[in-house]
Length: 229
Image (cartoon, rainbow, N blue to C red):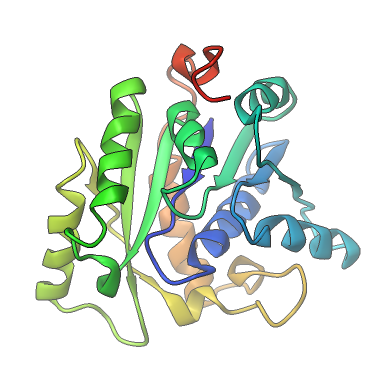
């Protein structure tokens, strides 16, 4: 199963979600690969720091950018049970092919990023990916600050998500400060802190993202020569 995290929230939120999802998945299945298609390479650096700190479970993290990404992903697939991709925003070439290849797209959305007119490009690219990959499940995640979102704010997030074909909104609201817990220690993340708010929220999101196992093959369009090179 391939899950791509597309960030529509402040910097580092998408990478943190990808790292935590990869860690939680590694506690369930045998081999998980975390791919970093973001310009900052935050996830790859996190994986290196985690290995140096000898934290368990270890997470294989690699950079995946530039031409030929789809072909490299195809070669990696047989070696891993699950792949989580941090694609950062929607504007990159890497994000386009990642969405076409994925089973699930997770889109963290902060309220101040939910202006549909200002972020139409993200909506358009998600809809375009579903044209090539109609089985793609798009799951938006409402991101809050220190306080919970009020109903009107959640409504604004739902209105944004409704612009993407067949998209859903996760039942759990993630709190950005709790998600950042553990970041002060190299290679750690919120899910390394047992029973923390961040770990509890991530566990709920993990259940929603991985609610089904592999039930379909990857779309052939993902690896069609010339489409994503």
